[in-house]
Length: 92
Length: 368
Image (tube, rainbow over the protein chains, first blue to last red):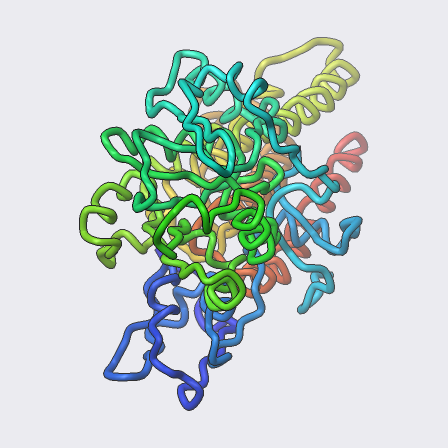
């Protein structure tokens, strides 16, 4: 299944990559692969912006605006601010 | 209407400040039915847990899946043992949501492992990682609190892959000396992962969103949409009573259908409904339902209704289905924040417009 194309905020700077392979380990959609001593960014449109890759990239080669793709959370952030500056979904 | 860059951090879970879960002592833990004994170590008593889920565990799982008491289904954080763990046994890290803990331990029969439960305030791994409670700081604090360096002889901890958005593995290693290995996405694959020397096949690293996965979620979504259902039903009942002086089932059924389509049918049939935005899928499915009702009324196999009712169906039903289907973005495993913001920038004004038109038309219909 695929969601909208050309929207992800994921940015990858190959120059900085040290080839540690963490991004390949953590990405739940298998977007990265290892080619020799560098990570290669594949199908960006599969990115769900969870932020696992950038959080685990010691070389800071990956940047992404992490968050959840949840319509309810976005509506809450627009209409009613979360008390701790977090807009949330699924609150009992 | 929908801002390009929401100013808040958009996360899962509850925004209310949940207090830290206290660590439990031996006496309290021994009352838990899933604790079957204790291992006495120099660092303290470690409860040993069973891999078997009792009837009570299973019934609670059903209750929680339907959204009852979901935020209070918590176990004490700390170190647990499973099987007969020794100093060289692997260490698994998990969240203190009981459902998560149960899903983990039930897959581990025959294994000897340590389980370090983080205080995620009763939230599952994925959502807690997004919030940061399943995070670097909590991992470091818990390693310290349970005296992990004295319990195990190795220096590796296995975290669930879905906890990775909250944890910087290199920082954990730098500050604690423990190397983080991310395990598979699903607990079911842990035995294979461990047997392969902590190596995950690429397939173990992928989140899926199969029909069975969606079916589970839909039960939650349906429970969640019940309150909207009741609100809509109450309004329709009132209108029906005012307009006709009676309660008619066909005043409800079309809209009940719209809610079920948006909250259950679209999620279940997600890959087979055309369009990528969830709201578009919902609107299309709702439109099919509205057209079916109109065709049924005209052909005579459903009760007949006036053209005014038909217009109301066309305006309201796709809007309701689209709105609820859009809400399923939060439950899916492949939508991104940027994508949902983009979808909503178009969908929300459109839904507001069709809903507004519906209300205006309904008001005017008394005078036409």
